[in-house]
Length: 169
Image (spheres, helix red, strand yellow):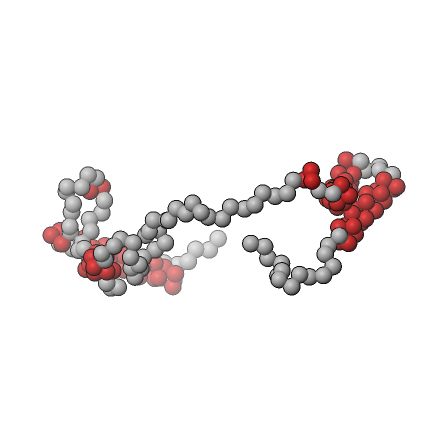
C-alpha cells in the first residue's frame, strides 16, 4: 500500500488544521479569569463550565424585556413555546358513544362478515398447514368469500342522504 509523501497536498492540509487548532487553544488559554462568572453559592457549580455575562447581554430578540414586562405568566410572549402554559382540564369533553352490540346484529350480516374475513384467513392457513387440501375445499373458501363480499356490498344504502357528507361527529 502506498503512503502519501510528507510533502503531499493531504499532509499540508493537516498541518494547516493543526496550526489553526493550536492558535484557537492559545487564544482561549489567554482569556483573563476575572471575566469568568463563577457561582460559588450553587452546589455543584465547580463541575459546570463557567459562564460569562447574563441572558440580557446575549438577547438579540429582546426576550428578557418581554419576560420582565409580562404581568401574567399565561400571557403569550414572543418566543413562548407549547409547554409554557398549563393545560385547561375540561371535564365536559367528547365522550364517544357505545358501539352497538354484536349480539343485536342480523345473523345473515354477521355470517357475511365472518365469510369476508374468514375466507382469506382460511386460505392462508390452508396454504401453510394443509398443503394437500382437496380442490373443492379451496374452491368452497373462495366462493364463500366472494358471496360474503357481494352480500355486504348489496346491503349498502342505494341513495345518498342530502345532509350526510360521510363524516360522523
